[in-house]
Amino acid sequence: VSPASERLRYILGEDDEPPNPTLFTEMDTLQHDGEEMEWKESARWIKFEEKVEEGGERWSKPHVSTLSLHSLFELRTCLQTGTVLLDLDGYSLPQIIDDVIEKQIEDGLLKPELREKISYVLLRKHRHQTKKPIHRSLADIGKSVSSNTSESLGSNLRPVASLSLCSTKLVRMVFPQGKHSFGNSGGHAQSRSMNDISDTPSTDQLKNKFIKKIPKDAEASNVLVGEVEFLEKPFVAFVRLLQATMLGGVTEVPVPTRFLFILLGPAGKAKSYNEIGRAIATLMVDDLFSDVAYKARDREDLIAGIDEFLDEVIVLPPGEWDPNIRIEPPKKVPSAEKRKSVFSLNEVGQMNGTAGGAGAGGGGGGSDDGEMPEVHEIGEELTWTGRFCGGLYLDIKRKLPWFPSDFYEGFHIQSISAILFIYLGCITNAITFGGLLGDATDNYQGVMESFLGTAMAGSMFCLFAGQPLIILSSTGPILIFEKLLFDFSKGNGIDYMEFRLWIGLHSALQCLILVATDASFIIKYITRFTEEGFSTLISFIFIYDAIKKMIGAFKYYPINSDFKPDYVTMYKCECIAPDPGEYTSFSA
Image (tube, rainbow, N blue to C red; front, side):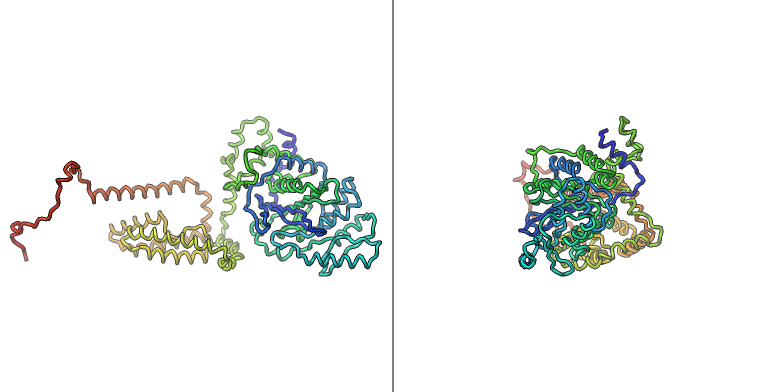
């Protein structure tokens, strides 16, 4: 067992603690536009990475983050030499920035005269992907105000190149020339006056539809990276807040921030800083490292988390693949419980030489392949409520907030292709199975009946159910059922259409009883064996029908076994009138 694993075992060993919230990570990079600066969102993570495409107009598809090994080692060095503040009692971004800068000055990592410049840079406005770039007229206004203010104040005042919008007034910050040092009492006020970020979420944040993809109890980790001219060595800080706090316009969506990573360095290494930012962002959404970040007691615990991550990293040779190719997320994400179980105090004996089979067999089966956590989650979702129509009530409660958008979003231009695809899928299915049903039921149910049934059932289902994955039209099992039912009715002298009506009413009554009693939770006990057995039955029935039709065709069109190819020119076909003598008498 490595020293990092030994350290993490005692951090993550308690199994009785509640699970940590899901982390949404956003990385912003510092952009320079003359004297103006702003933080621009460049990537985001929930589980996988999404980048802002080169044009800056849209997000890329989620993909697996590919990191350079060098960036992970540089990140490790940053955490070793930078400032680490765990359980900081922060209530606003200016106060957090002041505490970080004060800690850097106390540790001798930052010169006191750089306090103002660092505060100014870190409190610039954040522009997210939903926002448009800074309007140039604002910069022109700032320059004009700067020149007028500097001329009126005289030569002993030096204007700071910042433009702040505070309470809808244009304010210019000026300080006397020379060095400026502030204590804790004055630092907060100064940083607050430099603050260019709104303290409350903006309208764009509240209207951002990306919030639907983030769990309700999620927290944010913000990564800020950039290069500045006035630094001689990197400014690095990792902050974990005591309580998740809303930091206004820092995050793309209104999610409270729990972690903050800052990396500012000398100019000329922007690509390196960006890769280090991507490395810490990827680590923060890793299930194991995020638990370490929540439970870490000091700097060494975080470094141990990075070392454990490095132990599981797979390195690809540089000449064997193209780094620009984005790796698609796997269809089934491996469970993190297997990785975390290694650090459980209950399995300490299994880590040091105990046979692997003993650990795998004690869990009740299925833990090695990662199946059990998924079944457990499904079982928790499909739980019997114990109330009459309790599951239906919960479904309506979950669906009701999104019910109006299901209608007006259908008129969006991007929905046209999906509507046409679903329409063609339904109509072709109705034509195919309608024709087969007509052959199987002597046209009691044909193409027109299939069209009408699909339209009526589909409209009612979409209005009240809202589950788009259900097949609304006829399928293979329905076709076989109708054929067997028709043959049964015909053989026993029963009216097929009347019999079919009572079967439909009986099925509807069964569905209502199942919904009212929350019987759908029983599906968690149905294994794949049941599905495969039913599919095998349907397959055998189709194969039997195909062979039966082929044999019937041979009986209807028999093969002439006496045919002789050598006598083909001697065969003839002629019409001969019947002999009248054979029909001597006819009855009336």
